[in-house]
Length: 158
Image (tube, rainbow, N blue to C red; front, side):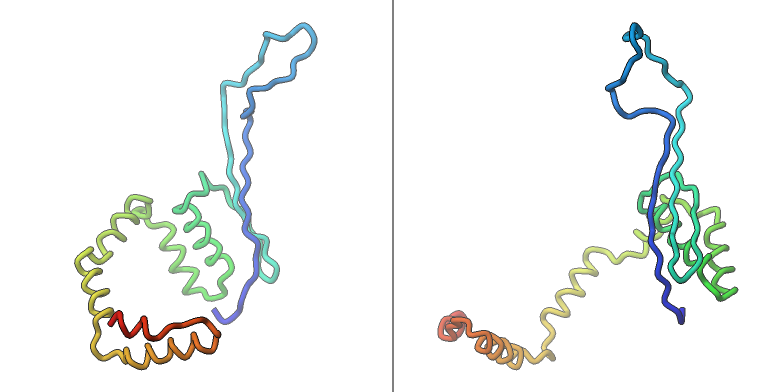
């Protein structure tokens, strides 16, 4: 995107039942409580755009998967490129787009623990890195900070 957009994201939920156990009764009706058996709740999430379009959408919840869908929808609405809008629309209408499908796909593409450890070790013990210059730069940095830096103790540890 060539432009930068500013918007404020917020979420709100409304329900037709109370969450509190404390109730206020009319006189002489203390033990008579009227309850509604049909409970429902609606969650809405929206973006108030400062220099872009604003929108509001009904969402089942605001967990991480749904928030991802909300942000993809926001990108689709705000985008000026028709190809981007088409690709995002295709993504959102994909029948495989479920929380479990996304988690299993990401888990398959994630490197194994062994591969991660090998990558870390290769970078930690890389012989081409200039460790002498790094140590010298650290000593100079501490000297500039006027920290009581005892170089003899560092040399003894080697």
